[in-house]
Image (cartoon, rainbow, N blue to C red):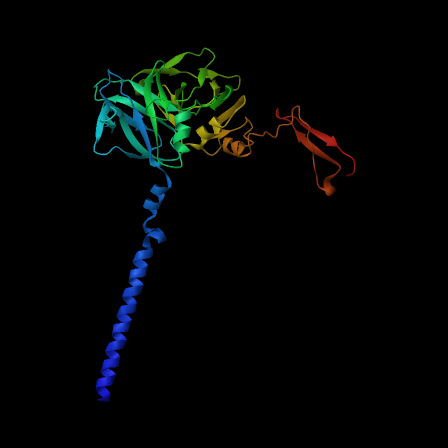
Amino acid sequence: MRKLTKSFQKRQSIASRVLCFLLVLAMVVTMVPALGGGNSTVQAAENPTVRLYFEKPDDWNIPAFNYWNESDVEVDNGDAEKVEVWTSQSKPAMLKDESTGYYYIDIRTNSISGFQIVNGGTGVGNPAEKKFENCAIIDAINSATSDTSFYLLKNDNGMSWYLDKDKNQVLPEKEKAAAHKVIIYFEKPENWKTPVINLWGGDFVLDNQGAGDASIAAWGNQDKPKLAVSEAENIYTVTLTGTTISGFQLVDADTGAETQFDGQSEEVKAINAITTDTSIYYLRDGKGGMKWYKDADKSETLIEYKEAGYVSPEVNGREVTFRVPVKKNRGCSICYGSGRNEWLETGFI
């Protein structure tokens, strides 16, 4: 009898342990999404769905959707698949809403920088398109806090974005910033011969002081504006006037060598954050590479300049307070932007 009791107690103990293990396992499985297993789902839920409607022009074929910074944008076009828009380049086709006749696509993002609706399936090299950057619809998409829709519809002025399908309320235009100049100075690398620049997107107008164009052989002899020769040795320059840019390339027309800066680069973001006439410098860094600087003396990089709010330490025309340690209160050395140094005698502090 005693052996039977012990056997029963042992079996009961094992059953209890198994039950506890199963309960713990169930808790762990339930908690997996909270511990990171469901991160992508949670992340997707953070951005609402924005549905973009498009009233197709009569002479268009199949509207397709192309967008920048793809890693930050989630696109859903249902079963519409893709359609060729440029040679060997296919983009998501937009779905047709049978009730309105409008085409539409769903996106989820809070950081889209630009997109275009393109006439797909035409077989031509440069199909018709509607492109949007740095405008009201971009801000509206990125600032959406709940599922919403916007409508690009025909009107007497061509097409406009509306907040409703019946064209009762137009999406207000974005207040445009005042144009300013950004003067780029570029130190030509040793193996470069003819620097040119290629801009895309934004509204910057280029002035290369009449330097003309040069053909880039590696690009099928496409002509691009040359950079003008500056007064400094081996330094070239170009002036941009406007408010924003989506990206640009500096290219050697002779060899095809290039440096590219797109809309997601810190350099383009820094340029777009400039609001007053400013000069910036792309110079050799002394370590075999190139860097963007705020001045020819390389005292501060462009990114550091941006982070400082574009406040320059230059003292021309400004009231400046100098503070020096007590042990060094006999004077201080002042270095001017031109490289000239002067010793300033001071009294005791």
